[in-house]
Length: 57
Image (cartoon, rainbow, N blue to C red; front, side, top):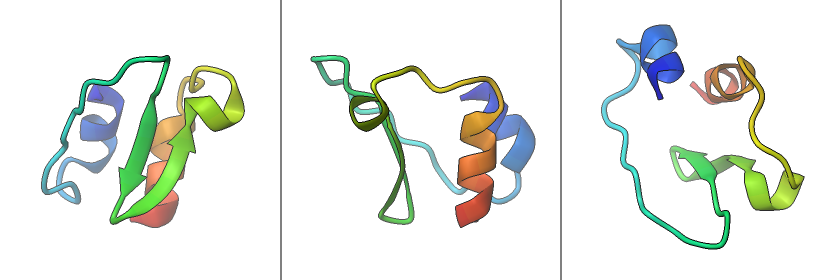
């Protein structure tokens, strides 16, 4: 989360965390799924999330 705020502090209006179970970790930007741990079967790598979010912003 800090990675996103540092990279896009002035472009992000809000961030919402929704607790889930079963290893679910998804990142959605403007109703577009940009990362899913369930789909990839792995944790996000350092810098990957910022890059993916930046592609949408």
